[in-house]
Length: 140
Image (cartoon, rainbow, N blue to C red):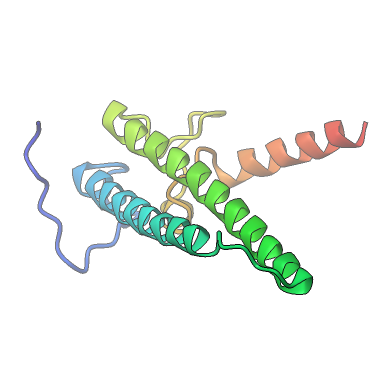
């Protein structure tokens, strides 16, 4: 295991430092781990909520409302699970040195984009091209 990189409390990645240096990688690693932890805690709360609501509700309207709530909770949980998987993938890219680079073009993804969406795998331009192509194929 490698030594922990010192990171000041107020550190923010800057364009004028080497791209994906140790401090930037550590910043994004910590950001991803904190986000994952938050999602796992929310997921545990969701699971508790689902278990609590699994009681038999005799009133039809109440039961329908409860089913809608359960369905929404399950969709939220599924979205969280997919997000955790993307976070794990980003953490692996940090370990392999691929983090911060577009998987389509190999170009650096802007720090601003990574700060807003640390699981990004493409530059904004590549992402937009990808979405346009997807839309065209979906319309066929």
